[in-house]
Image (cartoon, rainbow, N blue to C red; front, side, top):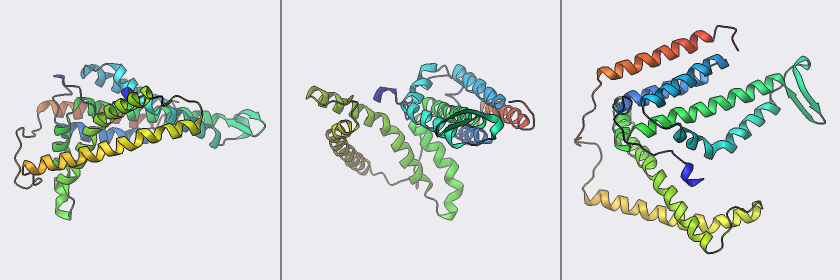
Length: 271
């Protein structure tokens, strides 16, 4: 389970998507999420899936990384689908199952599938962003996008730094959790017990050292930043300056075509 978490992981590469400006990738990711929630039929989701596969191919990523990102939240996806299936009501003409207190309508099945695709594509799309963008590039990109809001008191640099540190330390904490789990299992801890109570009790010797390790790492990071006279974004220079290039325009153009195609499908009768 721990090894399947890909959030915050970065895979270095020289692909077209790797070379895009981080601001381009962040903006496209945000607009991708918005577009995902505006989709009204499965035909549009088919286009979005094709777009994701195209991005995976262009970025030279293995599809297994996207699968590994979905696997840890598989239970949540199934729970959401089942909840939508039983909660969504329809008409008597669309009733599919009527057994005891269980009533499943055609609209419920449709909504369950719809929400499943939405969550899966959401995870896949955001995974491409983190897999092709280093934490430093993400920090610079977020700070640059938030800079206009500094006039109204938004701490752009501080927010960007917090988000990048959080992303950077997710894989580190996952590795630390894996090491602690193996050490506890060597001492007889059972993390695979089907009994929920026993499983909850077995997590206590895991969480305590993990919290201690997290606070220790946070303190070490703060001391390292102070030792290097880190004072935030004021007057701070960067080795690599962000600059929009022609390839960023191409990326926005391809994404605009996807948005236009999915938007046009909102007014069709296709499922």
